[in-house]
Amino acid sequence: NAGVTQTPKFQVLKTGQSMTLQCAQDMNHEYMSWYRQDPGMGLRLIHYSVGAGITDQGEVPNGYNVSRSTTEDFPLRLLSAAPSQTSVYFCASTGSADTQYFGPGTRLTVL
Amino acid sequence: AQSVTQPDIHITVSEGASLELRCNYSYGATPYLFWYVQSPGQGLQLLLKYFSGDTLVQGIKGFEAEFKRSQSSFNLRKPSVHWSDAAEYFCAVGAGTGRRALTFGSGTRLQVQP
Image 1 (cartoon, rainbow over the protein chains, first blue to last red):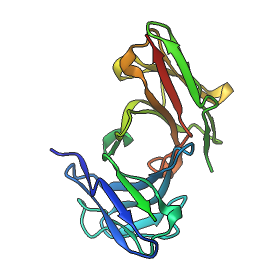
Image 2 (image 1 turned 60 degrees about the vertical axis):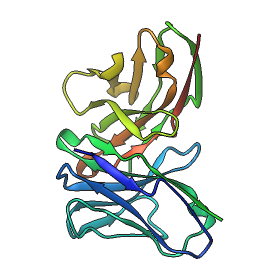
Image 3 (image 1 turned 135 degrees about the vertical axis):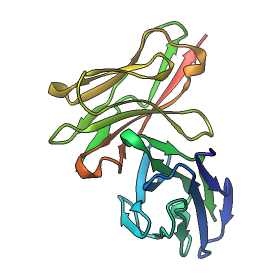
């Protein structure tokens, strides 16, 4: 049982490039979410999913796309990276009693 | 929409001293309340949560928190701090059908002096 895994751990992009941050969980949780963490701002919700095929926007969705084709995977796509998207990204899945399990994070730098 | 305020950005305590981290929330009904801890370069670990019932909740690592509806607060406490408690602490709130989409406070960084 690996919990929530995220790849890559670190990534550097140039402005305008696209990429996908991967997130997977092996706990059969229906609810998954993506957050970004910026200094002094805590974590902010980007997108979330309540099950395969169902996604919705969070507080800061602009510039990001998500899809949920399986229960296990919830990738986050940056379509055209901007310096403002430099951040640490956390994926989480929610289990019983609404307890969220967080992945280790992806540190993204956009130049 | 709900919101969370953690008034203290940075707190320093001596090892063995007691600790209280403040958290105030804004929401019309009873929210779901959480405290998470984040060590440097790590993800977040759940310390404790409150959904309903007893307003004093116990968590891991000797932490507890008390829900006070009249003050819209959910302060985190520990009677005796250990050097390993140095980390950043986040209060979070989830509400209603969106209780799984958490709103986080900006965090309190705890430093422990020997």
